[in-house]
Amino acid sequence: MELTGSGAQNAPAQRSAMGFVAAGSYLVLFGGTGDVGPFNDMYKADPETGEWTLIVGSGAVPDARYGHRIIHYNGSIYVFGGQTFSRFYNDMHQFDLTSMVWTQVFQGGSVPSPRSYYGFTLSPLGFALVGGYFSANGNVFMRDMYLFKPAESAWVNLTGSLNGPSPPVRINHGLNAAPNGVLYAFGGMQPAGVGTPPVYLNDLYRLVPHELEWSQPNATGIPPSPRSAMGFSFADGRLFVFGGVNITGTHMNDLHSFDLTFGTWFEIIKSTTGMLPVARSDFGFTSVGTRIYAFGGRGSEGFLNDFHFFDTVVSSWIQLDAHSPPCPRSGFGFAAAGDSVFVFGGLDSKGTLLNDLHKFDTLSGGWILLGSDALLGAPEPRSSLGFASVGNLLYVFGGQTMEGPCSIPADFFTIYNNDLHQYNLELNQWTDLTSAAAGPGPGGRCGLGFVAATGRLLAFGGGPNKIQKE
Image (cartoon, rainbow, N blue to C red; front, side):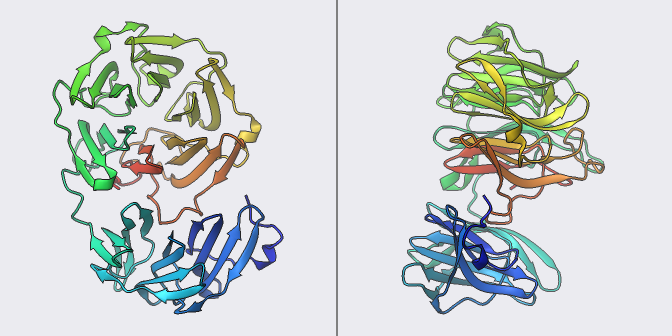
């Protein structure tokens, strides 16, 4: 919604690069920069009434700044870092929302260097900070990581704490989360560089978010062959890999599972019954209960819009003859929410980018085009995007807005997005969250891994003009 209610006359001056965070039932804004320079004022907004209120506090008010981040924790707003046109900060300030008093926070431990435009979020372990920007005699972009523990008022440098083998950079890989929140990344492609060919991968990595550690499971059995743009989903205590494309450009339709309990790869295509889907890549692949649904994609004969599910209990493929499916496409978003699966956007057989939204009810067995209201405020048409669900909310992140496969280098593909959009299934309404999201966010990219886990949206890899490894 737009905050233009009865308190609109009290709204903050136009600005950018401010701190912005939810605090209970309110939204709190601090600082930023505008036509007159940096600010150090604070406002709260009531999303229900659209009313803004200027918060006037006492005590050690922080200097005016922008490019900083703020966190709401235990009834207080915390401000760290930021910059003016001539100075960078690494101070921390606390504003108590009850007493309305500012206090400068003593910071012990390994305090991060001055910076702006960093990632800053509240985690179960404390305030997590990643990266940022600093400029003295040249631009410096950082990739270090710190944790501030408010009970101890001390920073810990976690930069070297991501133990274990970190996955190589990649695009068009699989990324999924087990019910316990552990992330798994599989396969994908390292695109060609100057004088080097592309490398297709079949490695499997695991990330335990709270332990900040990547590892490779001790797997037995024969893993799937190297591939990218495959299906990768979790169901019935196993990870499933289906199809994809290999280094020769051959599409595949083999099916493999990885048992998370026993750490064993198993090829199950030869023991299945039913109608096996044709070989494909860039398709939708997601689970609802013990069924894994596969839709559309790109095969050797062109674009597809056939629809199948694999029943993990009886090990059988079934093709669905559903009425009014989405048009043939590839590179679209495909995610499950409740008993339904959703298709968003992609690229059709005519080379047209799409931003339509379709729903398939797995109980009634029918496709529904979410009507013209669903296009109001929708993200611009795109392909190779990130798409995930949290409860009754669908999220779209990034992707490319020009025709063609997501590959590197691709100089004629000039628009790679890092915008974030939310679709509310109850309100049938799109909301652009790009400017409201705290932190600088990932850079523009396509072919990324994007998944919801432990109440968060997580992006891994992908690439625009360079490969991302966040």
